[in-house]
Image (cartoon, rainbow, N blue to C red; front, side):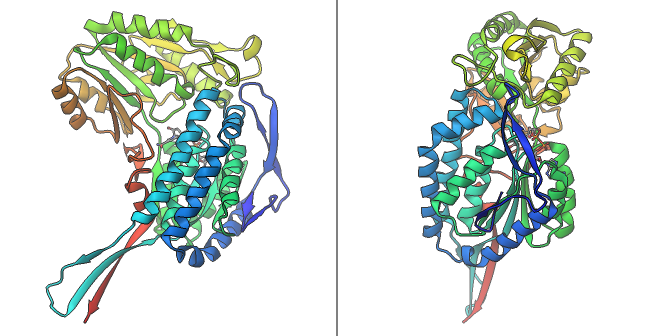
Length: 475
Ligand code: NAD
């Protein structure tokens, strides 16, 4: 762990093991921090805040720029570590490290764009000034599915704004978190500004984060259930919160779309990170007129996907994070099959040969999926593409909106008016129009409804770590 400028063990001396989800091989051991370690980390962040928040935006920008340079230099070793620890294919890990570094350079630049305003007064002897101030100590909790970029997406803007922070990464990916912290440490972050607490049991750390009045802001990415519970606890101290939670993305193919192009897009998008992405499509709405062309292309693409150790050449789908993730996917597929869905491709756990020691599920296509099946409403977080037929294009946006989640949605059409109406009608935070990658460090990322509160990235990303101060000057 990294607390107050030093790499330390847990006070208790306890550790936990980290394993490779593709092979079961042990990768290393990390400290199992507890509530006392989390409190020490908050002490350090609290003590470092006055000096760090007084640095100039130019100084903070230079440090973030240096971190970007170091992350870029180390990108290959970081990508290899990510594939070993998290499982995604090496090519995808390389893309994630680049995405992670993008947040550093973006917020190195945004640090210098935080400005204030002169505002009008009704009194001739009065002047109003409104400025932005960093919120204070930030507590961050991050997930395993994007184990480096989810850290930089929080650390970049928090540090740029002048906040200090304490971060707890997911139990499955603490080595990626350690390597990310090494980048910041080597870039020259002053002692106490960034603190890392690893833990096998996240509950007590969450209690400290939400219960300590010195923590001004909680930023969380993970499941809706945990985000909701943490938000409820943090309300007691009136902490500011950003929670980026689960999703259940619709992918709508309109009748005028090219079904082959749309199916290729769906196949590319759905199986990224083995489907373990909050913006992964979970409902593919395809009009009856295009179903056979769409399903044929989708199935032929999915059949060709190779599943295995992400380090191996040609692998398109890696393992899932653990065995219970495989069981959840299996349960959703079985439930759909029992209720009448077709399973033209995949549909089974992979347990033989090279898959024997990992957590693998075959890339799967389900057809004739309908409401009433678990997969229609529950987030899958696995490599399963559920196709839902529909008749009426006037109603499909309504069907897509019929979810408590509101993170990402995708639309395929060749008609600009259809695209614009869908964009306006869909209640989701991120919408791809003929586009399977509507994300970037330069744009806001986040959802509506049960998908969370707040936005990361873009100009808004830094505002989550700032608050407004108004000065009235009688002159
Ligand atoms: P999770 O909620 O189980 O874990 C996320 C983090 O919360 C981990 O660090 C975990 O240790 C921690 N945590 C769990 N219980 C805690 C507690 N009581 N107190 C404090 N921390 C606690 O989710 P996960 O399985 O790691 O991640 C998958 C979920 O994350 C999916 O639902 C996915 O959609 C979501 N996700 C959302 C986004 C987004 O930006 N919206 C991005 C990635 C993942």
